[in-house]
Length: 152
Image 1 (cartoon, rainbow, N blue to C red):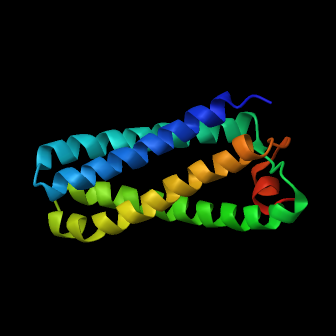
Image 2 (cartoon, rainbow, N blue to C red):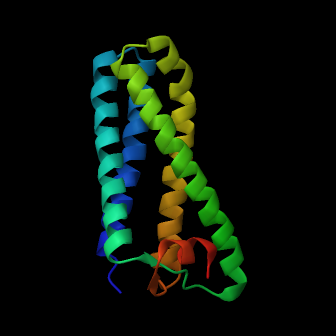
């Protein structure tokens, strides 16, 4: 099984998380222009991740957990947690970007730190899912997304 696409997509989400951290640093230093530039790139990397992931899901399928059965239930719970974080983080990211572009800075400033925290959690758990699927354990076969999420 090839891990090229999962490696590429995971690299994009990891880079997005790193850029969000830099963006948070720059705004704490009151470097607004640099913050905006870095956060735009974080959004670009997150979007490329999503498109890569979506394409792989539609055309190839998702990878079933290939580790031992006694670990599978913990993996499935962890995967569901990651999916919830990623979904909430994605929606919060869109809202935060919207407030920033519309110059609604009070709202942007209020939601931004929370969005960053959720996004860090999503990126970290995403990299962990990748590590469990392709590094620690051999990836299983590919299957439709619901089969992968629920371990059917």
